[in-house]
Length: 131
Image (cartoon, rainbow, N blue to C red; front, side, top):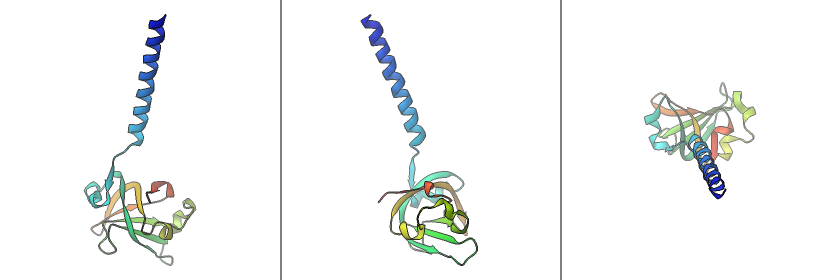
């Protein structure tokens, strides 16, 4: 009888560990630093870094917001691009104000425009503020 209880307990622990480790590995994607983002153009990644400046071109077509990571424009290491005119419903805050001078992690497809690394951000769910 003790053997059956012990065996069941070991199985339960093993199954719990397996489920927990599977969940962690599925959620625990490896984040990269913003200065390394250029190496991953064409891939979906989590990129972390400091937004040093922002620019909202409210009157421009699509109302783009530029989040300049690492360094100020035009020497930024990566640009987070939000087409706020199209995606404003997906934000509960003003990204150009709330995210300025914050360290964040963003998840999305890394692309390149005019030789600069960028990531289009469509929803605040792609952004995790670190500080």
